[in-house]
Amino acid sequence: MSRSVLVTGGLGFLGRHLVRRLAVDGDQVTVVDALTHGGSSEGLPAGVRVLVEDLRTCWALENLVAGASVVFHLAGQTSHPRSMASPSEDLAHNYEATLALAEAHRRAGATARIVFTSTRQVYGRAESSPVGVSHPTAPPDVNGVHKLAAEHLLAVYAQAHSVPSVRLRLSNVYGPGQRLDPELGFIGVFVRRALDRKSIQVYGDGSQKRDIAFVDDAVDAIVRAAAIDGVWNVGGFRHTVREVGDTLAALAHTTVETVPWPADRVAIELGDFAIDDAPFRAATGWTPGVGLREGLERTLGSFAPG
Amino acid sequence: MSRSVLVTGGLGFLGRHLVRRLAVDGDQVTVVDALTHGGSSEGLPAGVRVLVEDLRTCWALENLVAGASVVFHLAGQTSHPRSMASPSEDLAHNYEATLALAEAHRRAGATARIVFTSTRQVYGRAESSPVGVSHPTAPPDVNGVHKLAAEHLLAVYAQAHSVPSVRLRLSNVYGPGQRLDPELGFIGVFVRRALDRKSIQVYGDGSQKRDIAFVDDAVDAIVRAAAIDGVWNVGGFRHTVREVGDTLAALAHTTVETVPWPADRVAIELGDFAIDDAPFRAATGWTPGVGLREGLERTLGSFAPG
Image (cartoon, rainbow over all chains, first blue to last red; front, side, top):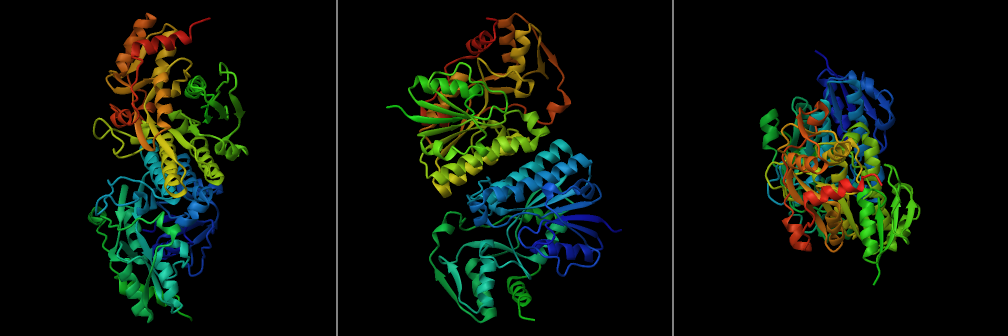
């Protein structure tokens, strides 16, 4: 039986992959995306309905939410440096958009669960390892402040207004078609250098651990989350930054060099970080399937000249 | 030597008491207040400069912050039920106003410490007792979401932009001239009933514990906090809701009756709550001086007909 689902931010990197998966599953997909950060409807399956709208001013939002079985809420601003430079913009896209969605759900008396993609950035520095969802939250940048506030808002709406939601604290997601903006994390930066056959620059010694998910695995986690409530960590495979660099360098026949930390990154860098996502795996049966080498190969391949 | 200090929200209940105290201490006080919630400049000492402005649009803010030794940031919306009914309004007054202040400080390259009055509401239900600042945060309503986000924002600005701040999680503050709006907490409601010689209605059995500070003590905590950084609990004297009702009833020659919890309050009621403010007392030498009976007597007296 076909579901009607709503995907906010469905034209972004993660959104497009999710939409394709949902279409394969047989869902009827509606996308709302403001195209604020240059998303694209290229390659979307036929039959996907796309509204280019800002959630804060989308008059159809109440009807869209009322007609959906699940709302995948991916819309947002994901650049941490940009959030520091333009905090009001980050507030608008990460928090006010979420408030608009939650309010539309409440007003419509809708029943759809909201699946919200948050970030492990809300924890700040790891005080213990691995980091579970009861670890203290201390967002180290404006993006983390607004993502955590959006989580908290959804928790309030779940409790007080019967707006069901699940909040996923994702770690690093990469894959074909990802944005290679230097502000969006180290994997995109590394891929850009590898594509350009330049040496891959690792800050410090590159020994910081990260949990990394290939986009198909992240999408599978998001789809499975539609059946549960609450807040969950979602990791992937654990690698050091150096391992990611070495694997990419081997695939692209280039080299790795270590460089000192730039001053503007030190202020918001989190150090070693290991996520505990065992509860999420147990609750949903999720397990990541695409390893680092295969994932990076497919990512590089997506950018190969025609 | 006289300091220049800035007080946002200086025309509200707590703000007016703080301004009077600062003037007595010899500070040169500038107040910025939007009068959104009906504050008043009545009774302010001579020489206090008052700007009726919204922080989000106050063009003078950079200059004001640059010229201040300390910024006491009390401006905000304090009604929890109102935050649930008008979340965007609460966002504007509690979060966006704080962002405007922090940004003005950063742009001005100012050095003043920001003393921010937050609330113990950010913790949600007490999972352990007494509640210290490392207790998990789980804001139970929109007001708590925005107050906590404002705390987090100030922590980010302290770390990344050298904007020093101290965040105080206050409990229940009462005293002469407080607003008796039923949305602003049980003490005001009780005082209103006592003034009207009506029976004081306690929800449930009234056995919930609260930390309660007379406004002069809360003001003294805020003034002392200007010398420290970080996040702190500030309590007062611990009483049950029933004890407050009984004391007021005795002072006003009326009675106490117990009534069932109204449905709309149950959703955001926190239950028993005991704050651990020992670290703040140790760091600042603060200790509350005005007990419940004296405090309530002075509060009632302030509303007595001329």
